[in-house]
Length: 444
Ligand SMILES: Cc1ncc(COP(=O)(O)O)c(C=O)c1O
Image (tube, rainbow, N blue to C red; front, side, top):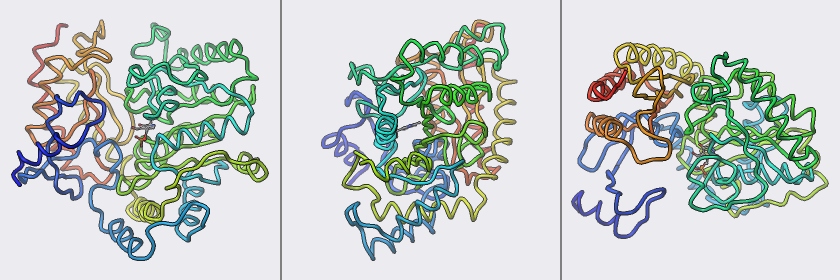
């Protein structure tokens, strides 16, 4: 079958997410190895996005591939009321790598359903209804998870669930609260505003505050410890649970095991993981709860379940993936390579005034592009189709053999944690070339 025929077959018989179908013209990917994927015509792409910021250990890692093959030959599936050696071991590993007293894990198929389970567990544990979240956040695609995120992907299916309360964001580059203030000063005000929201919603109705441990597709927003410590203090004051979503920021992405590890005084009561837990090799989500919450469910039913909870192939993939993070020191590596990446992005900002702000840590960094550094007018608007300069950037990156996640006025820099310094320099050169094409759109 020719490449054109494969494209047509994909278009004729499958639907694509988050897109009008006619606008979809897929590149057909046939294989992946390390930081590269290869299309049906043999063209190589540097995977600067780690696909959807999940293929953290790179493509086709032999250890994980072998673990999946061996597990498939032994046992592919048993129903979730059975135990398996792999399920127990992965649970134990997650208790080891997650912070604080997080101990017992409920498995799901991906981030969305793990978030749903976290919200259910919090509501069952507290007997309260409302979940406080942020506007600049994404927690998944089903009705409740989409309502929880403020991301505009929710809008077309609203009204969503009625028990979500959104709070203001610690987005110092754009939130007016921060004008003339430091990040810490603004963060302290945001916490006061959230305190006020809790009082107005009735603390006795508030089950949990749900936030990303390190924000992702909403723009890698990076508050100070004042924000996270403040959230923890509010939770303690009102008996509310802190749920931290580490679906994107987990497993070394930011140079720590989890994004929340950058804020060691803000221990979560519940943490949600997916993506990097298996590096995307097999779908898996996980909701880990503290000892105290786990003990509650010793005598109270956990009203949540899925046919594929603790799927045996996913358990085997998860164990092998965590072993790869450990054996190859990938968390430390992401921290070190993150410094190389930041230096390269800073150098690009010297050359290209469209770079308004660089945020993030480790291999989880974003460029926010503007028409003018003083007014901060974005180069492409929130929730609008990409403007001409952003389209040019995206096209140039693809032509130069890079797979890059761009959104609105943002370019995400999230390669696999296995990326080498030379591969980072290749990617930075591709970015330089793309940004050169749009220097003329700067209006400063
Ligand atoms: C922070 C965060 N939470 C939850 C999700 C949903 O995960 P999934 O797409 O695996 O259901 C995502 C997906 O991108 C995410 O980035």
